[in-house]
Length: 191
Image (cartoon, rainbow, N blue to C red; front, side):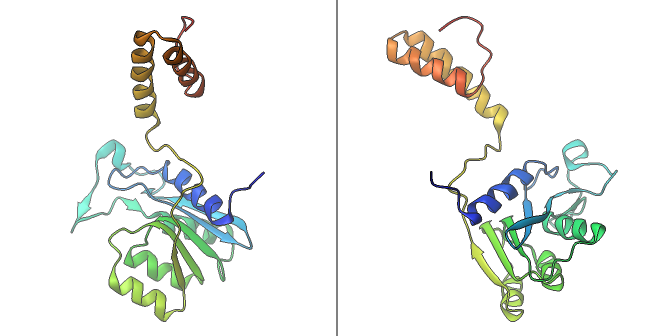
């Protein structure tokens, strides 16, 4: 059996964390790793106890939502809160870090930044990472599928199953049965 590669495993964790994001502008997840062990995770969301973007809308100033704490910062703050050192660690982020997160990652002693997608990569952030000797590497998530819109997928699959049932031929009914089983769709009648 072929196992998932470490980079894919940790990037998948970051994508999973992103599903907890409460900012509507961009769902971001971050996983801090040391010696192949996850030491912290974060996602972009509001300050503890405060209003969330999904409830109140984004609070945008100068093109940035100021209501949220970025995923990378949340992961670093989790380490600080619980006394977990970050010196020499790596971080896996769903999107290239913003300039402020770049500076915080450098100060925290992160040695490698793995990111899945480019996102407004600030030239100064790129330069700062290079000056600090921090390696950056794009690692697209390709071994695992994380559905970021499960309800939309479920709704679509219900429509597909209805069409397959209407077709009525043996192959279509078998495909419909497989979809009902895989997506745990609520069909009471036997296909």
